[in-house]
Amino acid sequence: MVWISRVCLRKYGGFVDNLRLYVKGGSGGMGLPRLGGQGGKGGDVWVIAKESITLKKVKDMYPQKRLVAGVGTNSSIRALKGDKGNDQQVFAPTGIVVTTDDRRILGELNAVGDKVLVARGGQGGSFHMGYLPNKGQARHIRLDLKLIADVGLVGFPNAGKSSLLAKLSHARPQVASYPFTTLRPELGKIMYNDYKQVSVADLPGLIEGAHMNKGMGHKFLKHVERTKQLVFVVDVCGFQLSAKSPFRTAFETVQLLTKELELYSDEMLSKPAFLVLNKMDLPDAEQKLEELMGQLQNQKDFAHLLPDAMVPKSSLSFRQILPVSALTGHGIEDLKACIRQTLDEQAAAETADLHRACLQELRETAWPNSPKDSTGTV
Ligand SMILES: Nc1nc2c(ncn2[C@@H]2O[C@H](COP(=O)(O)OP(=O)(O)OP(=O)(O)O)[C@@H](O)[C@H]2O)c(=O)[nH]1
Ligand SMILES: [Mg+2]
Image 1 (cartoon, rainbow, N blue to C red):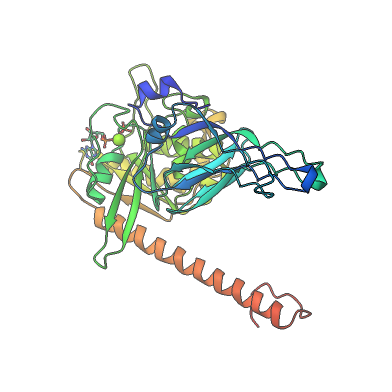
Image 2 (image 1 turned 45 degrees about the horizontal axis):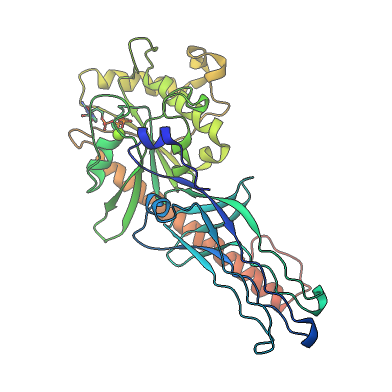
């Protein structure tokens, strides 16, 4: 069955980022006892990554909400071995994680052409099975879209995330002076002089209490689960959601954002993170920046500013703290350079890890009995 929250659809303008489908492999064909014939295997159901497709299109493409593969043909006098049933293929965009209803991961679609087997066809009847065929595997699966970007922008509403994306890249996301202007994730690409491209995801604003489904909740955080870096975008002059909500200084905002990420998943906080203090063109900005730097250096002394439940367990150590103005462009080139440098360092570390693993494997093959060396040096 295709599942999609109607509220979500209404609220986020038809953007579909998850889909639930019923899939069933085809049953096998009957064996032929008289001549020892074997029935054909039932067809399988596959999810395959394809270009230029969205989950919304997938949803529209399968209004029947069920995908059942073909049945294997029976064994007969003319064809003792029955034919395999037709496979069913569901095309989906890249960036999809395919899970069962109980969240067991069946596979991921990271590149065009990646395939995940989601329902196996039943075996055809044969001598060993008393010539009776097996039914195909049947279950519900979920296709969950997680954008694949190098960098994710996270921040409270109105902090200037979309303005920053527009300054960093050619993307033109909607920008406005009210909270929750961005209703769905947007991607942009930073182009460097050496033609390297780095993708950046702008997300709808997070607010305190997002883990309790306040505002847009946590659901969009899944899109930054796989990014390599996080950029916290904070209005240096603070933020107030509405007249009834408390005013939050930049320091409190950093704490609250860290808490929300921590509540979503500890892994989020293990990524390299930058703190971007936006709106440095505003009159009080320099003074606020100084105040914030003092507070960040002595975080424990200022923990009392928020109720205990809102203070994160661990404090984030940012790779860099960058004052910028998405309006004037001040500090944007520095931010681009920091992002690039860290990505290059991460890539170099990954390559070194890979070399170490290859060396270790070579060593184990060549000298199976040699002691293991965690550094991989042969
Ligand atoms: N003065 C000043 N205003 C800015 C700056 N950056 C953004 N703004 C303004 O702040 C408001 C919010 O900007 P957005 O880019 O829409 O903020 P956002 O974080 O994407 O907001 P949501 O999508 O609601 O989460 C807009 O009115 C922008 O023009 C800046 O550097 N300086
Ligand atoms: Mg926005």
